[in-house]
Image (cartoon, rainbow over all chains, first blue to last red; front, side):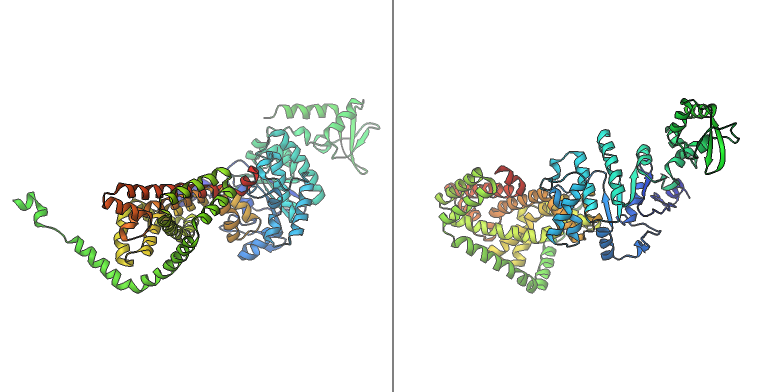
Amino acid sequence: MDKDEAFKRFGCVIGVADASFSVNRGEVFCIMGLSGSGKSTIIRHVNRLIEPTDGQIHVEGRDVMSLNAGDLRDLRARKIGMVFQHMALWPHKTIAANVAFGLEVQKRPLEQRKAAADAALTKVGLAGWGARYPDELSGGMQQRVGLARALAADPDILLMDEPFSALDPLIRNDLQDEFLKLSREVKKTTLFITHDLDEAMKMGNRIAIMKDGRIEQTDRPENIVLRPATDYVARFVSSISTLKYISASEIMTAGKTAGDAAEFGPSTPLPVLLQAFSDGASELAIKDGDATLGIIRASDVLDRIKEDLSRV
Amino acid sequence: MDRILNPFDHFAIPFGKWAEIVLNAIVEFSRPTLLAAKIPVQSFLDFVQGALESIPPSAGILALILLGYYLGGRRLALTGFVCLTFIGLMGAWQAAMTTLSIVISAVAICILFGLPIGILAARSDRFFKVLRPILDLMQTVPSFVYLIPVVMLFGIGDTPGVIVTCLFAITPLIRLTNLGIREVRADLVEAARAFGASEMRVLLGTQLPLARATLLAGLNQTVLLSLSMAVVASMISVAGLGRIVLEGIGRLDFGSATIGGMGIVLTAIALDRYVQAMGAAARDREGRG
């Protein structure tokens, strides 16, 4: 049953349906979709800020749906940190109190809270700002505080609901880079919501593309671009150049090199191949270990580039 | 023919009788309960009144000046000083203290009931739907009309005066509590829940502090409505500034009526400014230095 049919028959709107996925430990998993596609609903199902009508949620093997109110609060406070689109910092609390809120809920002693808040603020580059109030900070700084707040209780999971959408492009870019760096350091399992395909491609180890409450495709970024599973995804990624994602294995043709050509692996990116040609090679051998997989001629590369440019 | 042209000369329903019967039945039925309900109100009023009347005027004024300086600086302290001194010089100090104790008692009871009702209304759309017409009715009914059932149920005097004042003044507090909580940004509340806060913590730590300005606007309205009830309530033998006005009008003694009226205005100004100053956040107070 699709959205329109459900609306006609029951007067209900389907928020999310038939959208199963699992996120691996330490992975950044992006959910990408336009507004109304159900991505914000789905992230709120994970910690049950929005109660799902039906379905299952498992965090580290624990069934979240079966938790009682107290255990659910405990899960939210200890296991899951959340970052919001419009920062959602409490204006009546200091930055330090905002950051330490999760620990305050856990009734940790004051010194521990202070130390954790300082550590988290240092991580996001805002050491010494703890005594200020949110309205004294710029948007980018406020979202760093939002991130610090999510990290302060040292949760295993980060839920990020369009965390950088409300920021200026330059600051967004900076924060994306910093988050990637931080993410590699702290290794948090991250569910990252965005409506921006470029952001999804940049941040995600894997991406799920949503449409009308359903997941259209879940895959690695390069596969989303090179091998879209549905027309919708294809239309979506048509504006993105495939050149950044193709590698030797996508260009090569079957055959053998005459003589001794330079050898490359199958996952060699396009710029490296181009460099080899401009260094004077006429053809390249693609090998995986000893086995020859195929060859690439300069014309193959040019054809591929032409094909990419004539897309859309 | 006359029956058709002037039907009301021939047909009438004894509505007044019915109302009397119903009210009497209620009075009969609930007298013990109502008398018991009156006792805590009375003892609270006696306590406040005793406290206010035992303070010598000069000490009272000094305390008000200090409080004014703490809450709002020199200006507020000056306002408090001028208002109270003038009331004292007019010879209305005693009456003003009586009125003030009735207002304080009424406002305290309004907060005791109004705040929880407002919170409940903010959390439950269904409850608010039921409550809204009741609040509309309470605000439409003229203040005099409240006197009738209150006199029948509670008798006359200062304590029924406090009760009638509560009935008249509680609505804005309920309305603005409801509004204030509903207006708190949804994502701030959601964020508190997302970090594991219990519903009680969400209410006390996030919703009420963020609704503070609106809550205090409601409180301010309730205080001023309580004070405006002083004259009306004096008709059921409530003492204080209102009685001076009422007696002045009754004897066509405009001098004393004006004293009573002026006393009410000055008390109102002082109360309004002080409650408003409470609305300024503690942070603003620090910032002012």
